[in-house]
Length: 186
Image 1 (spheres, rainbow, N blue to C red):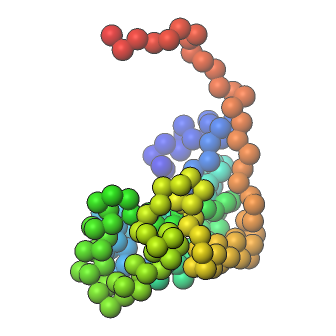
Image 2: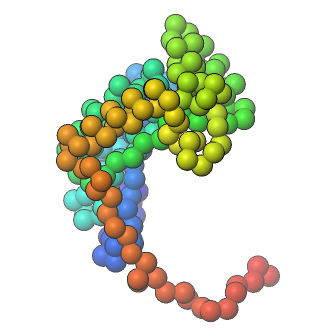
Image 3: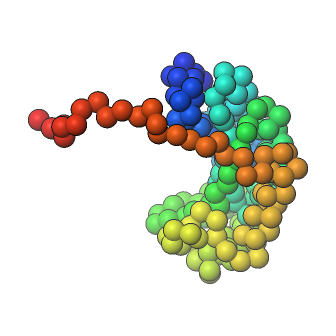
């Protein structure tokens, strides 16, 4: 994202962009097994800082939230992201569609065998007994006691950090259709 700061600044002048940087964990050991080839959390926080300094609305996505594994980090992630310049925050609960569920279960067995059943049971709890649901209102947040606890923790962390309900308002006033004709593939 930072290599496109000049383009993002132009969009920001027209209120046509908000950049969301995902931070799954601040634990370097966990990030190495969870997202081995991605930017480290400190680099993501530095990107938030650079974007904010350039006047680009930026926020943090705590995603995916895995109940029983990284959900306890939500307050610290939000606090550090806001300190770096994040103006808003969001979260997405872990989704395990199709073959991803089996891969995730094997990943838990390899890296967190003692916590595997606890984590899977919490995911099932927020997914109505399943590892995944596709319904629009439920798939990103889940429902039930653990989903409510994560939501309360997230909202509390945002309120404490001073970014409650603070998503920037975007505008499409500057959008111009380059041509009224439908383009052709050939």
